[in-house]
Length: 357
Ligand code: SAH
Image (cartoon, rainbow, N blue to C red):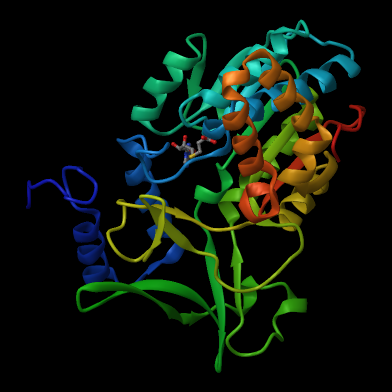
């Protein structure tokens, strides 16, 4: 057994090596399996965020992002009757920056929720504790308290969860599997017919069609929606993705701010796929949660007054005017994060409509 450290990940054993052995002994693995293991390794022991890392997220660009999310949640809570106890729940809080900014904004409106984080990474948990010392941690939603409304946020969390791909070849539908081709990993149609995994309406799509689904994302939405219905509350899911169903692969990898081959050095790059918000809204509604809408991040932040907020902060700190405006543009402009990123709002039955939807 090799005891050397993996140059790509700094981890004890190379994930490539583990995958190679697994594939050699049991055959190709599903793309979802590949992605789940690779991301668990990737997030497990490092902080990939920020200018010096692999990618930058909205809360790391500007404090305005988390503040406006905090305001939105406070507004919902106030109009729903200021119920206590109330829980702020965040899925995959990264460095804890969004939570810190949101909690500061909520406090100005008398909202001081208990804080529960769902996080898998040991390295990031440490940073989250520094940002929000009172936070309690969970590996998944199962043990987050059940007794009061939840105000839940997930920014760039769903895109890191595994996707499954089904492809139509001449013989019918197959799942995309990962196998070894010389030195490389490659995605290939599996041997087993998968027609039964598709809704009947989609089975007739032409050869070459690829459909991406994420049972892992659907499971999260199912659980969050169920909790909203039972406990009350509201939720925001923010991610890059599409509001209407589509086909084609969006599976990709980012390392050092560049797109790289997702089949090269698993565990050494962030693997993501675009989020299918249409499917997620259906899952939420199937449990009787209220779908408030899915809009672009640019529209949503503008509706919440990001332009006024940037002005107010600039008046307060004129030396930062330029930086404040340029970070605002990164968040809202169509050719930056404004259009590709979507915001989906959910609420409990009986909770009010949300600003911006
Ligand atoms: N929301 C943060 C970080 C986004 S990166 C931001 O906007 O900056 C994705 C986050 O989800 C990280 O905190 C990562 O550790 C966490 N994560 C990814 N997959 C996870 C899983 N399966 N379970 C729990 N946390 C996960």
